[in-house]
Amino acid sequence: MNYKRFSVLLCGSLLVQVAASSQSRDEAEELRLIAASQAGASPLYFNPGDTSVPLISTGDYNNSNECTVRGGLPHFFRKAAAGKPLTIGFIGGSITQGNQCYRRQTARYIQSMFPDAVMKGINAGVSGTGTDLGACRLYDQLMQYHPDLVFVEFAVNGAYASGMEGIIRQIRKKSPQTDICLIYTVNIGHTEAYAAGQVPEHIKELEQLAVHYALPSIHLGMEPTLLEREGKLLWKSATDVPGKIVYSRDGLHPVMAGGNIYAAAIARGMQKIRNANAVEPSPLPAPLLADNWEDAGMYDPLQIAAFSSGFKKTATDQLPLKQFQGWFPYVMTAERPGASFTFHFTGTMFGIFDIGGPEMGQLEAVVDGKPMKLVSRAPKGTRFLGEAVAADSSGSYTINRFNNFCNNRYRGQYEMIILPAGKHTVTLRLSAEKADKRAILGSTQLEDITRHPEKYDRTVVYIGKILLRGKPGR
Picture 1 (cartoon, rainbow, N blue to C red):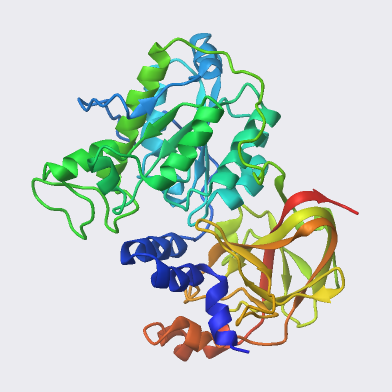
Picture 2 (picture 1 turned 180 degrees about the vertical axis):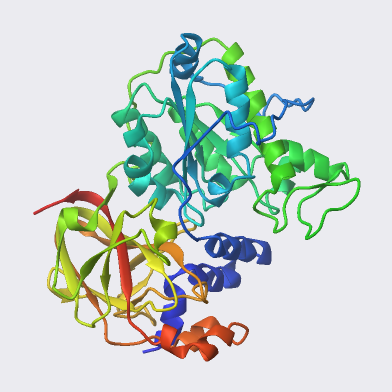
């Protein structure tokens, strides 16, 4: 069995290796940047009125297709007009988590619309992740804090529509008074569609959901596309260029100037929605997608699983785990092979949200008493594994928690495993088998493992959360 190949397959680098054979170089590079961006948590709350953040203006760009109002944001604007406290939530990937990319500038502008309002912001951005994990973590990281308005940003992280519908339906079910606005970020490969007066294909799928649920949506990439065509904007530059707006350093994650352009689009959208006639939401319609993720959830490990004596509860208040404290108040840690944990659930998928790093080992999955040989079953924007069948030429009984982004650093990461619908008993066990970490890192990343081999020659796991599509319990 080719363990070296499968250890690459399972984490962020898989998405690059598989994509490179079937997608353009730009798409493969986008996936690499997304995976590489995965790191630690950011503070949950932030201050929309922070005066150190630029107060952007709406500017003079005008395109009627940039924002579609549909049902608008009636609850939010009604509550704002009444002078009540407001909570604005942002959920997405690294573009949402980042401090320059749009979120803080947007919140500052909304605070300026209602200067007397007591307002707080929630940053539920997790770098390098899509709507699959987003649907799982929605309640834990956002909805339990009762936001009045949620901006949802996942367009460049795969735009997985089933996960997006799960996010929408969970919000509408848990809090009908919470308004939702979909925002569509772009990367360097999406501007051609906008330049031709079209909408990128993956965003069209999300727009179908916006229509179905009467949600406002805002295209953040239209103005930068025009500026690029006019020679005023560079989508990617390692350095500042006199007389040009530099959107990003990598073609994906905006620097402050790029984030200001994104936020200006949202500012224009907020004004347009505010000035439109409010429409009261209709009852929640039937799902548009049969396999949507409204049944997704995220659970503290000790809440639903039984752990063997080889695991211990470890607080995340000390280095190197402190950067993950915002996601995981504790992790379940093991290093001795054979340590295991077991849980029961009824549903179709399970997974883990964990920490990657130099010392990571591998897990083995036993489901309903049967060891699982796994292969990738991942549509774009997801991280799914499924049971191998006879036709599969590859696969592994181990799930490697080390990847080529773990070179002398720690990162949040996750994995989901597909099962037949039904009741399941799942055991995850720490494997004695060690991955070939030098091969995974590649020839350009061998300095740290050569200087500190003992740091890598371990079999550790840090389990932060258990992910389910379905319900825990027998």
